[in-house]
Each structure stands twice: as structure tokens, then as C-alpha cells.
Image (tube, rainbow, N blue to C red; front, side):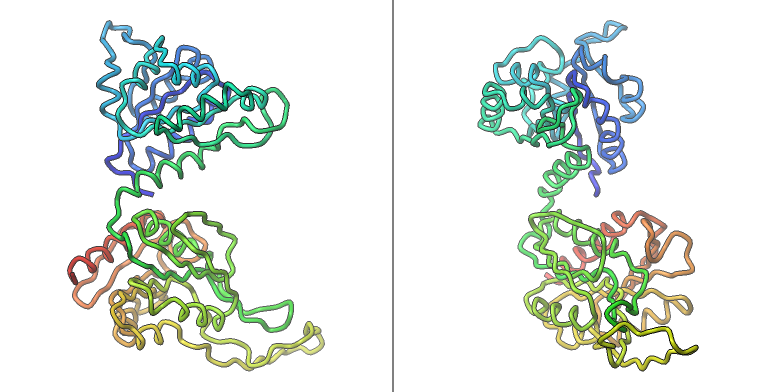
Length: 401
């Protein structure tokens, strides 16, 4: 996910869950966000300002005045932020926020903020369920703040119940989706994306398949949804999970199943991205029982699967159609042929010979080839590759309207 230019202010209060903020800061910085951190005085007992400063690449504040006498303006810091996160938010800090108490720099900054506020409470289960806490959370929601609910699990006290601060991954996704929802260049656009491999059964136990993990297709779906698109993601067998209000996930196994599902949605799509690694052939007959290992040689007769992408090209109306080409030789020449033969608007080329690219990897190096140009990109994470692909699609949409 890309948060370039976004300014995130994190207020850390004094709870044991504060140690988790280190990884959250790192994730925000990796997404190119600017992160400023303010600690309550008691938070300094739980986390190291030096560690947080190193991760955020900014000074960490906890007092109104620095050691050199410089005034740390809570007003300037609050107005700087695009979003303010209080995490962990202890029962004490929660009560002070509700009642407008202002006995430290973090609370003064909160009271000066004009940006959206997110609160990740963390406390023991009885404190979390206490009527005063529930009332305070309800009041902050009425103020227009967003509550990231505490989770159920083992607590620092040794008890098990609700009160654990939401995991850093959950907080990161919540804030990232909120910030990216403001970038709605694909608002009201319907995306159809295929992902992962297909498995073609030989018998009830064995199948023909490939090493595709689905990572590229899932990254494309998440990025498109974050930009406002309504996404139908048709995935072959994959362990990946995705939860997003703008994404409908449909699971299939074989190429024929994927073909059927694609053409249930294709005619309504504005953009179709075929990133799935669909098997070209399938066994002509599927054994009803497991094939026993009797002979030295097993002969399988294979028949062609339906060419999903070719049929999408033939049935194309006003959709933007994007294909993928994974090649091992004559890469660009073969991709150009596929672009024309299958009536694509653009094709994403990657090579198995490229270090760090291909199946099962978290990175990829691609070329995006259209009818008019070829753009070569360096090796990047698949989430960053998804951004590059969707930027090209957005440009294509703008040029055609």
C-alpha cells in the first residue's frame, strides 16, 4: 500500500501494548508515510524514544519543552497531521480525552487536532467492559472519532478476554484504507480480476497445477479497491485471504470453473485484469478412484482448456482488458504477439529468468506493453507493482474519456 505524502501522528499512552507500535511505525514508513510520535510521560516507561525516533526518522516528543528549551507547539503538530492515532489508548487517557483534560503534550495535541482521529484502546478485560469505559468509547464515537476495537486474547495480567490492543497489521490496514479511500479515481468502476493457479484433477487425489501463489492478483484487487473500485476477485486455489468492503472473492479450482465465473461478471466490468496462471491443458478423463502405482509408465491424455483470455478479447465491448505473460525466452516478442492475438489493451510481462520475479515471490520485475509503448520497471514488491499497473490503467481510462 502506498501512503506517499500522508502525515500520520501517533500518540502513545502508557500501556504494555506500546511495544507493538514499533512495528506499526516501521510499516507506515515503508509505505512512504511521514510519522510523528508523541508519548505521554508514562509511555516512556514502556517504549524507547530513541527506537521510535530511529524508525520514524523524526524527533519524538513527550514534553512541551525540549531539553534545549525549544517549545514543542502542540498546535503546529496537530495541524500538520492528516490523521491522528491514539495507540495504545489506556483507560486513563481515554477518560481524559472525553472530558477535555490537558495535563500533557499528547492530550494538548489531541485537543488541537482538526484531522480524523483513530483510537485503539488497550486495557485489562474488566477495565474494558466497565460501564465508564464503554460510555467513554461511545462518547468519542459521537465526537466523530473512529474506534479500532480491542481484540480477544491473552492479556498482560494473564487473564484471557477482550482488551488486547488491535494488532499492528489491523491498525495499519484500517488507517491505510481510510486514507486511500480519499483517492477515488476508480469510484463507480467495476474491476474483474483473476488470480492464482488452476488445478486440473487427474483423480480424486492428484492434479496438474503450477506454482502460482495468487499474490499479484490479490495485491491488484486490494489496490484497486483502495482507489474506490468495486472488485470481483476470482481466485484459483490459494492460501491468501483478503477482507475489504469493496472486494468480493470467488474461489474456484479448475480452468473450466474459472471460465464460467469470469463470464458471469465480464460483461458488467469496466476493467478486467487476467493475472491468473490458468492451466492450458487438463486430463481428458478424471479417474473416479485413486490411480494405483502399478506400471512403470503412466500415460495421460490431455485436452485443451478453454482460452479464457482469448474469449475475453473476442467478447470485449468497452472494457479495458489487461493480460499477463510469464515467459522464459523471446519474452518481449511473445508478449507483443499475445497482446495482438488476444485483443488486449495492455500486457504485463515478467520473466522466470529474472531474479526475484515469478511465482511464489513477494517481488516482481515487469514491463507493461501497450499498443503504443513499453514501460520497463525495476524490481519492486508486488504491492508496488500493483500500483504501477493501476497507474497505467488509470492513465488509459483518462485518455479514453
